[in-house]
Image 1 (cartoon, rainbow, N blue to C red):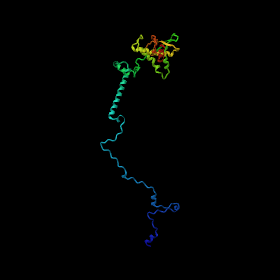
Image 2: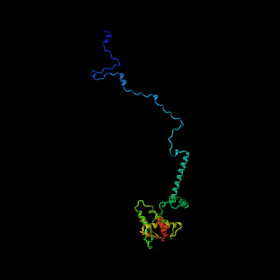
Image 3: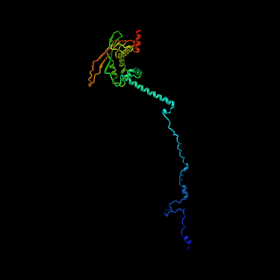
Image 4: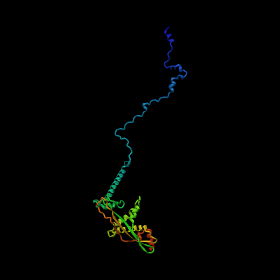
Length: 295
């Protein structure tokens, strides 16, 4: 037998691209073979890699000597040069004024010194009346006295008889109104106290007024006393206040136990003469009524 016969008896070899047949025991369940081209077409397409030519070219660096863009300016720097000059001058003026004001306040409340002796009038002109201060720096000489202002009145009734009231302690009534009051009024705290200080500073030891200020202080005290007595006294219809009298009762504050200072606690009275009440000393409504009765 020749070579051709031998090759004819051998089984032909499968082609290279042939799909091998599945085993016989899985022949019934296995799906039919699929074509390689169909499998390739059924698979999802893969994204092609980006072409190098599709990327944007890198930004070129700025040339030498050119500055990058700066952020926008804010505040005074955003103004024009002329406005910047005006703003700087305004700030400098405010700073100088604040320094001068603080210096004037310091000289006003500080104890007497060379500056206040030479320029005291300028300091007072700056301070009064808007920035008045009623305390001294570190309180070098605080008040160590209790001063009570008392008053009484002579009342004429509608039948023509006169009577004199007892002494009313006006300061004690103001103190009782302030004690325990979270928001006391300015009248309760300062009206009577400042009026008496005004009177004492404008009169000498013999109760003689010093110029116009003394006369004004008398009228001020008289008006306050008339209003306070009318508030305290149960006056009948037609009764009027003819005269008033004022006195002060001053008592020194006792020294503390650890102090060797000897202080007299005996009260000192300062009694003023009787003052006749005029229509100018009455409230506006009563003054007009009094003038009408006189006519």
